[in-house]
Amino acid sequence: MGGILTGAPRPAGPGAVARVEERTRAAALRYLAALNRHDADAVAACVAENFVNEHVSSMGRDVVGREAYRERLDGFLADFADLKYVMDDLVIRDVRAVLAYTMSFRLVPAGHAPVRVRGVFRLWVDADGLIARRIDYWDGSEVQRQLAAAASSSASSAGSGTSAV
Image 1: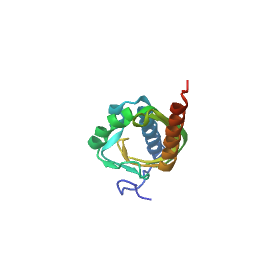
Image 2: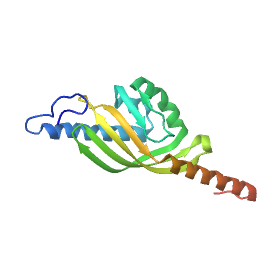
Image 3: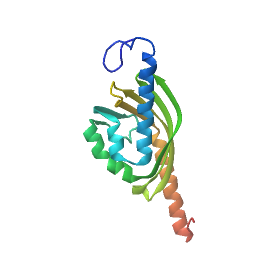
């Protein structure tokens, strides 16, 4: 099978596939760690210059290019307070990684409403160990359901004169 990103043949020789898969694994884990540190520069440093970021959810926003991605990261990290990705599973095959996660955060524009959602990153890693493409799958309707429940709970508490401690 040819290389996913380059059309080049799969690596040959003893241990070549293992080295490629270790590079892929390291790139996926480095990216997740940078997101969990809320370090926009470190996150951007994990992706290739021509990075393609695709969201399957209609709530997500696609972007192409490291520079354009970096420009969005500060706002994303500011809006998603206490952002944390917990890796549920990681499958590596050649230059591809499939990383299942549970993401939790407090959405600042929604009054710090808590959200917890499961998702999957599909990642392609280039020969430099940088993420060349990411497709992110998560349930936007579940996020909206949790935000609506938090807003309803806040309205009920405000109307009754009580507040959560």
